[in-house]
Amino acid sequence: MIRFLVYLGLLGLAVAGAVWLADQPGGVVVDWQDWRLETSVPVLLGGVLAFGVLLALALGVLRFLGRAPSILARARRERRRVMGYQALTRGLVAVASGDAAEARSLAKRAEALLGDPPLTRLLLVQAAQLDRDLPEVERQLEAMLETSETAPLALRGLIRQASERGDLPAALGHARRAYELRPGAEWAIEALFGLLAKTANWSEAHALLDRAAKRGLVERETARHRRAAVLVELARASATADHARSLFEKAHELAPDLAPAAMGAARKLGEAGKTGKAERILERAWSAMPHPGLAKSYLALKPDQDNVRQVLRLEKLVAARPDHPESRLALAEASLAARLWGPARGHLTPLLEDAPSLRACRLMAAIAEGEGQAERARQWLDRALAAPPDPVWLCRACGTASLDWQALCPRCGGFDSLVYDVPFRALSSLASTAPPEALPAP
Image 1 (cartoon, rainbow, N blue to C red):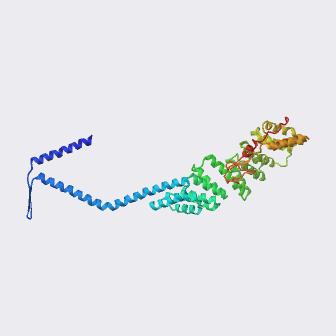
Image 2: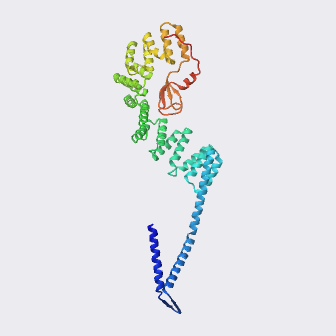
Image 3: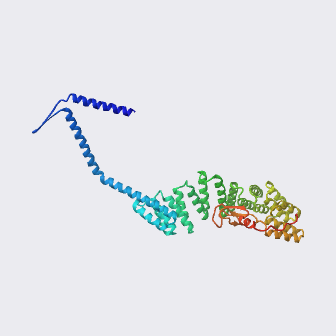
């Protein structure tokens, strides 16, 4: 509204000026050599204005003619850019549809039109992957390292390529460089940590975990348990008993539910004559997660005691989790070793109601044999053939079973993936097995 009013005001002033000039035409005479020009002031002003307009038009035409080459070049570049990105788009569609030849052809066309942009390299990598041309994949990935924008992506691909061909040192080198470029990227931390673990660089892996945990780049509980697992491996590789004991104890403090840490600490403390501290560590570990190895380590601290005293000692160990199956099984084994048939059977009875495990069936067979009941012992052994398997260390990633804990899965290489549980594959096959003939009450 204000602009409209200003426009009206200016227009009114222009009209008033024109009227004023028309009312007072005046006269202008110009003598120049043999030329004489006589005219009125309004006509002169109109001529000057017309000359100015013509001059401006002429200058505009000259300016356009001077800029025409650059305008045409820019239009050509824009047309090539559009055509190049169209080729890239069609190339990505070809990759998605599995047409490697078409993808490679379109990638080369895009490269010619666009002048080697990062996306063209990526398309060439994907086309080479479709053809399983690994040397070409690595060549293109190496070329992508020259550009800062694509270097992290190239390193991620190189890590995968080196890992797949089993060249862990090369993969580790790429992972270290990726971490230097992107120290805050979760994938870079995971890749570097995994390769440090696979190559047994436990000290560097522990330092990496510390840095990541302090910066909040790894979830606190995950970092805690991983650090404990790394410390166990460092303790196992330690050359001195005192250093190994210190590492085992730190691992136990971080993860009381990690039985190997407590078992290692107890063993080293027992060798140093610190039996009381070793017992407290094992009792804390049993409270967190009962495991048969903890009971064996507990009994091994005082091997000279008779079997009856060992039963009493185990009752102290399992006091925090008396109803846990491992507590009952441990007490049953100790009672069996002390030839206490009745208490051994009493510990096992609650475990026999539904589907007793393989270990429970074998213990019942041993009790029956100790009591001179050969036929009943045979029946329990027959039942053991179809019993659910005992818990073992299972990889959560691939399901591989291991008798002993280690930080890396022996099959898939997963770190800290072993948990103490019943093999699910054995249980799934057991579901199709007919139930055994019922036994009389124990």
